[in-house]
Amino acid sequence: MSRNLDHLRTIAEQTHFEKTGRYDEVLRLGRAYAETWPDAVRCFEFGCTPEGRPMIALIATRSGALTASEIAERKIPVLFLQGGIHPGESDGKDAGFIALREMLEGPSSAALEKIAILFVPVFNVDGHERFGKWNRPNQVGPEEMGWRSTSQNLNLNRDYAKVDSPEMQAMMRLLLEWNPLVYADLHVTNGADFEHDVSVQVEPIHTGDPALRATGLELREHVIAKLAAEGSLPLPFYPSLARHDDPESGFEHYVYSPRFSTGYWNLRNRFTLLLETHSWKSYETRVRITLHTIAGLTDWTVTKGAGALAVVEKADAAGAMLGGQSVDIDYGLSDERTEIEFRGYAYTREPSSISGQLATRYDPSKPQIWRVPLRTGVVVKRTAPAPKGGYIVPAAYAQDIRTRLSLHGIVSRRFSAPVAAAPVEAFRASKVTFQPAPFEGRTMVSLEGAWNSEAREVPSGSLFVPITQRFARLAMALLEPQAPDSFGAWGFFNAVYERKEYMDAYVAEQVAREMLAADPALAAEFARKLGSEPDFARDAAARLDFFYRRHPSFDERLDLYPVYRTDADAFPFV
Image 1 (cartoon, one colour):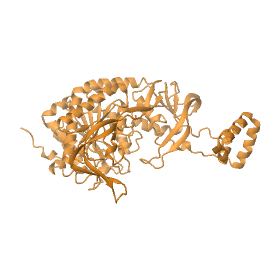
Image 2 (tube, rainbow, N blue to C red):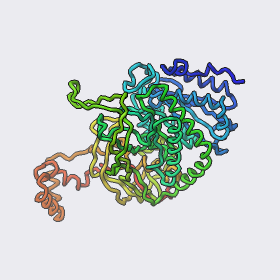
Image 3 (tube, rainbow, N blue to C red):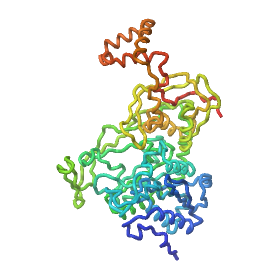
Image 4 (cartoon, rainbow, N blue to C red):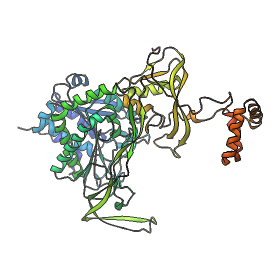
């Protein structure tokens, strides 16, 4: 005889999916699940938000192992369900509780004998409690929902690489402890209106270790087949229009860098699935689709998890052998386009008296096939050679960078003594381009330049990051200056591109005359630039700077990226 579990029904269920609950419901249900199934569920806090709210997770399994160490020792595959990274998109929260309840009490309970499910109902807790009716104007239901960003106005799904927020730092500690095989990040789209109701994107398929891509593709196709069998119209790409608000422009596959969950977790040699239910479907429909996705993920992890664990263990071992190899660090799209038949709705595009431009209006009562281009060809934009030894971070930056690397699970060691002339490669920027406006609280920067061999003084307390570790790909993504989400790209080192000492013009005039008189080759170079570069010839400051940059007083550290590569690994370490 089944038990009465009405006290475990979500507010969404009780209101026929008109509403979703506040965070007090999450706390209550977390405790109630652990009390109802004490042999199979544990609820625990893993962090605290800036506004002082507890961040909770549930681990559910009937394997007899309820701690991370027991699960790792017994090689039990862990499926991680993350809800509420964008709290207005609350589908994952409600679907996760329903799915766990049905698995724990229903006929699919046997699945939990072979796997463990780690569930974070709400990642962005402070944002969840910024509750309001119009927080998601592009979405149908629930009546009220949370806010996209945190109380510090950070978008957590841009914070995986830089780990600025307390919430992300807590998440990294959780991930390092539990090491899930599959990371499912549960979202809702924005964008155009059409018939398709869900998109499923998995990595590694296009990025990350090539040895993992076949398994990633198998995971994606399994979940898509499950959704199609349940009556959905799933897509393998995010349906974002190539030109904003213009359906005729078609779609482009999005290549995720490690600021996103989808581009991050695969760099730790595991699988990530980004679920995007369609915002214009009803809340009940979206939660149901999320439930079907969780079911597909669960049965894949049950049937394929042991084999996938063996595959990722090989990738971990291979990651520690990357030294000297060329590694892909940035991706883009080719120009290749394929025409697809996309199930949209009839629409018009007419001049608007409001915006003064063409405005799109959809008619959901009239399904229509759009024959539009799809751009999906992923290409490698940039590679970098992995150093044979590792990376060196000078002491001035070591404390902050070491803390962040540790959160990612990247091993580093401190220099116990200075090295007067360490053999390194140093990157000097020849062009520095700052983003014109702040993004996620930082000023991002792109660098042009080159690596060259130098002998650099390395102070005691500097950091050595060996390449011989399983997360070597992630280390490169964070430390290579031209990687899109490196610490350098996020502006951690922007001060090194600022000139702090100057030579007054009257001093530079005298110095230049002395240098010209002493160095005929320099004089010839100066004359050549005057004759061949009109802009240089007209720019008084540039002409004086020509000499200042060649004078011993010039700051040789200007534009020197404060991370070095080295082939050596035998240094004095703490």
